[in-house]
Image (tube, rainbow, N blue to C red; front, side, top):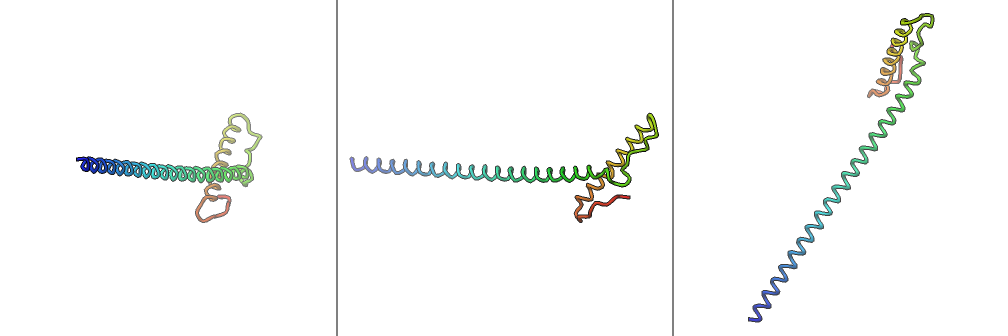
Length: 122
């Protein structure tokens, strides 16, 4: 009888040890997979954020240059100052709209796929 008890105890101990080892291995594998996925997601998010920030900063820098130099376009001049009242307001509004259109056109030229240099649209 005692030999049978010893065999049963040994089998139970071996089964418990195997189950514990399997559970530990599964937990370690799951933790490693989760950590790898989190690291990959964080790296991808950081790369995307950096790329977006760089693109936006470069775009804004180029846009500021175009808006600054937009006042030097030939037709981008202030309206005649001899007019008074509403005529001046309407003329300046038209001037600002026209200059904005020229600047948008110039920005479009900067960002086209053929790298066409800035040219006056007229």
